[in-house]
Image 1 (cartoon, rainbow, N blue to C red):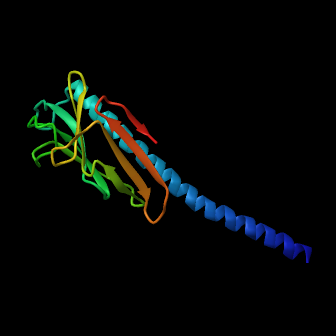
Image 2 (cartoon, rainbow, N blue to C red):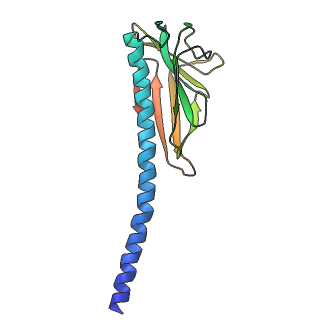
Image 3 (cartoon, rainbow, N blue to C red):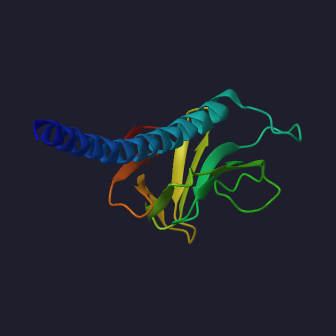
Length: 162
């Protein structure tokens, strides 16, 4: 009888550990995705400050990140036409796909286009229809879950994960 009680206790503890392991693993993936987005914003800022050349050999007016609302990706682009936003397929584009377990669940403004230009890293955040904002906030969420992480960026270059 004592052996059966001990085995039941061990089984119960093992089941709880296994359930929490899966949840903890998804939480780590969410944290990593938010940190990667923040790092990509910083990478775009670095490109703008260094006047990095595109694959075509031109020096664009700036660089930016375009987040098309909700979904599973965002774009890093070179502003080759000096429009201070993502406008066409001719710009040097890197499409960044999110982990399969993560999605962008919200974006303020609805379509965030974050653009930085040298020499002073002046920023511009627009919503795709002409509205200008001081801040952009992107919310990453575990698919099928309730856990979220927010990444905020402003026109002065501040980027942080909430």
